Image 1 (cartoon, rainbow, N blue to C red):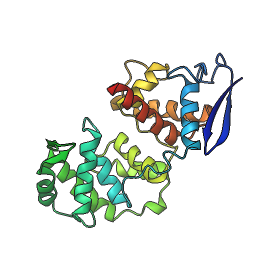
Image 2 (tube, rainbow, N blue to C red):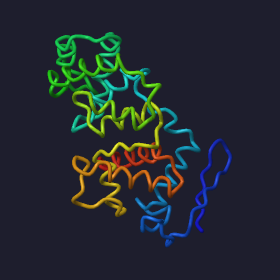
Image 3 (cartoon, rainbow, N blue to C red):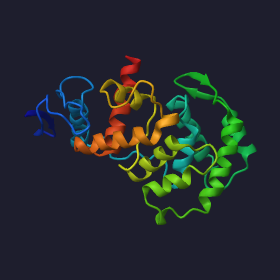
Length: 242
């Protein structure tokens, strides 16, 4: 048995985990919680984040339309800062409260963005504007309350420009869902390091298989999949820059 401690608001909390050499059902070893990128490490980091009240909200928007816009405008090689800036611009200018013409959305996306004193442009504004207009129209006819997490994802993947990763991102953010996983490059790298994913596997062709293993790992280490996903993404993204 190994025990991890954290202090929050002058109170000490502890999290007990199996010994480092204990095997998970997947065949992976728990590893030590103080060794980078082991299952125990991720379990401990997610637990500590929960204790400290981090990641209590993942949603970027206040409606399904806004969340779809935020996730559609980001991802797939788009720096997170630019995608978020594009979403906020469209939202603040009232272009997400109705089905706006693609030409209007394209015009607003084509304006340069000032990010940390640097002028940057959004990539493929015409393509994303067309996708977003079509998605907003489809969402207007969608009753998400009648759908469970996986059914909602299935409906979203039928919309232009939305694949499994983007649809999973929308569902996870909107519902704090542990039924899906957002398998981007950071999660893929973390999964390969611990031996959960193979080197030749990729979300483009193996998404559902990779997702099932990720969700199962989260269950085995008693961590909500949405929280594990968020913690992994943040850690791996920061370490990439380091």
